[in-house]
Amino acid sequence: MTRKIQLKIKQLLSERGLTQKTLAEKAGVRGNTISDLMKDDRTAVHFETLEKVAQALEVEHISELLDFEENENGEQE
Image 1 (cartoon, rainbow, N blue to C red):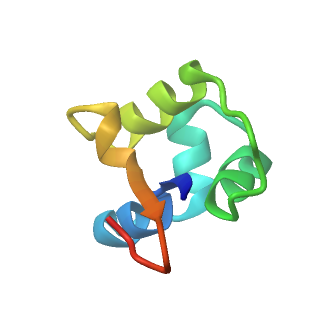
Image 2 (tube, helix red, strand yellow):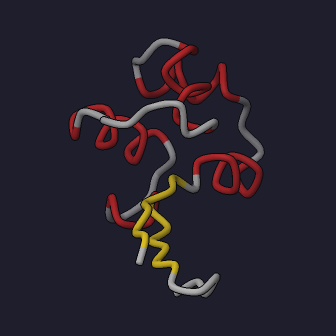
């Protein structure tokens, strides 16, 4: 069984009509940080960074940024 957490930043940007650059500016993080988060290039993310991104995207709870996957025989939950 494989477990993975993916960030839904791309989806949330699209829903809010924002660009990566605008999100980075609103969150007070580097543009490369947003790009890396969207590409799943990071194995670790500071909680503070996720909080900043959540606030900039105006989500009520940080869990709205996350998509939890649990794969067993190709199934997703």
